Image (cartoon, rainbow, N blue to C red; front, side):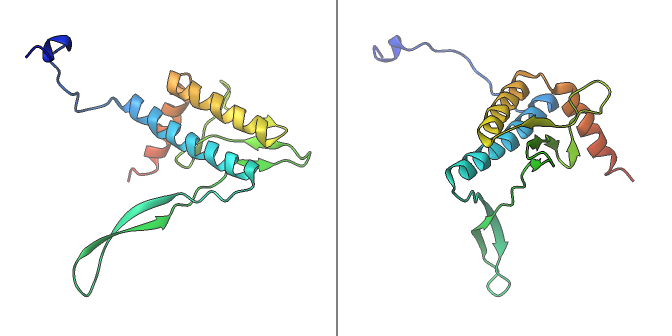
Length: 148
């Protein structure tokens, strides 16, 4: 018992539900992390090919198997006529705008190294809650598409 005396013991209960705001932040943060990995791979000249686990049922035997299938990650940027990169942030299929009028939906950078820094800054901003209003707006628009 003397070994446990050195530990700080507390009564704890795990919270079973996470608020929708935190769920949306986490979802966008994870997607930005994928974009960061994609840019890093392109800078290094490598191929970024994440995989996801998929459970399929064998039609002949009826057994369930877990297989790895490639996950498609689309680039959130395109090259402008001037040769610069325009980064857009997406929540689902909706683009997030950065100004109050809703007209500025992209960030312009010159190089992929700058793009990497911008994605890291955006990830920090999302995790800090700086884009909660924009995420909420995009989420509302996205959900409206599913209502009959």
